[in-house]
Amino acid sequence: MKLKITRFDVAEHLDSPEMITAYLAEVFSHGDARHIAHALGNVARAKSMTEIAKRSGLTRESLYRALSGDGNPEFATILKVIAALGLELTPIPAKVVEPA
Image (tube, rainbow, N blue to C red):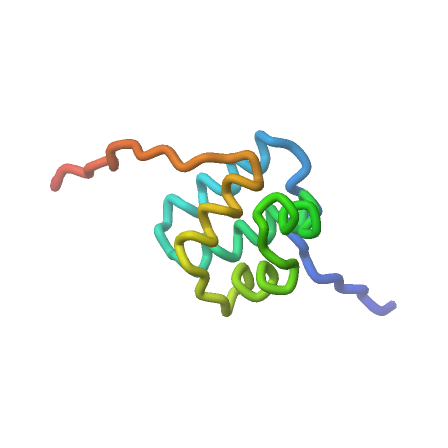
């Protein structure tokens, strides 16, 4: 019997504001700019890349390119996408781990 393998697509599971927030919080906590951009792309796909493009004033093609794992979007693009997703960036103090 052959085993059927399908590609996991996180966008299919980002189906609630709570799930999206938890997903982005986890990705942001690692501080990797490329992973953050890619995660925003996953959320944009979950919510409709076409709609996010309209809301952000960017083209779908530029969003796909910028928010891919290989993209390197400008910070202004990230801010437009975050706003189009109905989210905001809120600075909070970093957790400082005291040496043992």
